[in-house]
Length: 65
Image 1 (cartoon, one colour):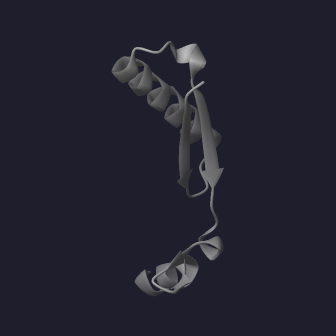
Image 2 (tube, rainbow, N blue to C red):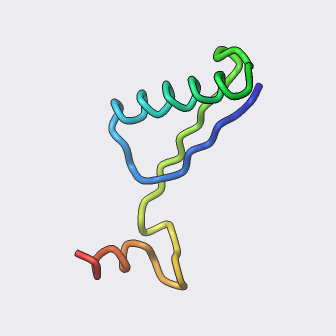
């Protein structure tokens, strides 16, 4: 079974449903594999758990606000 993995910020239930629907549809269209075969994993990452340029993403985001 093909697996599609999305890693990003916290999402609403509605956003997750939309991503799953769109990723699956696009993958089916491009590959010709039936949609029932696809697994979509959504991994939500807190900005404190992501490092960019040697510092936590949460710190960088605070500076841009």
